Length: 371
Image (cartoon, rainbow, N blue to C red; front, top):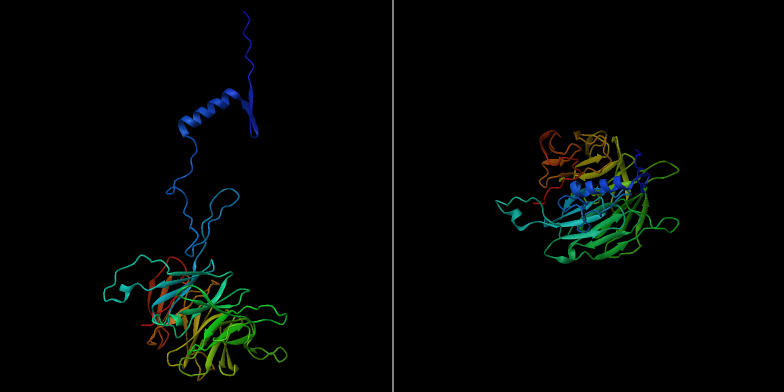
């Protein structure tokens, strides 16, 4: 007998390999019968990605088609002077205004899992600093505004009710290009806006938006005297009128006369760049904190030879600006840390009297309600 010759087979090219057509058909039948055709995942199955709008980060996809998770996070928060709303900033350059729920001031407020922002304002670049107008009152809409400064942009004053731009304040360098302010602080009466730049202080008249301002260098290049570096934070003394403190990334704190911008003295002692300065309620003590620095330093401005005491906090490695606050009565200071805890310190001696877990990650902002 003569064996039958095998029937000629047709071949199918499949990407990088070539397989017989019957085998390809069998594999296709197996996939359809047992695995099912590939389908788009449902909303419940799809990986979570924050949607754009309301200050959330935009969706993004990489070359492999995988969805990237949002890396957006808060960068501090501060109550308005009248306590009616809260202002915060996020890493996606969006500022959020949150109205205080009406039942929060009641004797037994209802617990909240969260609430949506009442207003979102998008800045074009990274926001360096922001602050409320000090005379802000919800009963007077004209006073409901705040100032912001962002990289490579003018200083803006925003309407906290409508979200509209109320004014811009621009400073220029020697090349007639806009230079960036790194810190902001209104005077207590709200008439002037003090701004910190690189080795320069500028003062704008709030009632006159534009480029007109008073400029005073803080460092003399020839004599090496004064306060050097980027001026990262400003705070006006609430009691001793005319005195203000200015922090620098050069690890120093300068105390100036606000009327003349004359430097009175410079304080040294921080291990990292100073990111916040804050006066005590009586105006005699000054508190300063820095990035990558474990300590908040307490200074007596009547005797500046050394610090009064130091307050330890868990901020040894982060470059984030971790802010602290002093309660309105002036008894305690609270600060966050990298470990997610908020610590409460008695200002009589700086000792920690309480601490609690506020978040699973770094707590970079704390603010007492004005009440």
